[in-house]
Amino acid sequence: MILILMGVSGSGKTAVGSCLANKLGWKFYDADDYHPKENKEKMVNGIPLDDEDRIPWLCTLHEILMREISFGENMILACSSLKRMYRRILTESLQCESRPSEDYPTQSPCHIYHG
Image: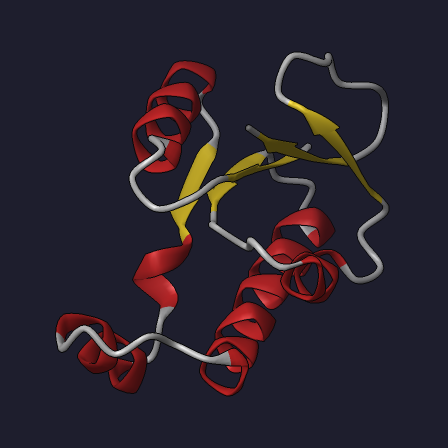
């Protein structure tokens, strides 16, 4: 199962996701760890990232999701993905179900929870 936690910066995605993954014995990925060097430099300097900066990063995250699904691994990804387009890139072909955080999961292999 793949669980994607989404929310704005500072909302606790990493804290909740890493704690939950630890309790469940699942892999945990923090999307911020996968930004290329150029994106990290922009962020450190207070320069906002645009779509052109984010799309290659989102494609990398999509590849991670696809790899873990192909290996049958359970994992949690913490990722802001605030635009619908970003969520589509992440979940292309994954058959994810998106739901508010108070709903419970179904049998889909991928679940997106947002606050």
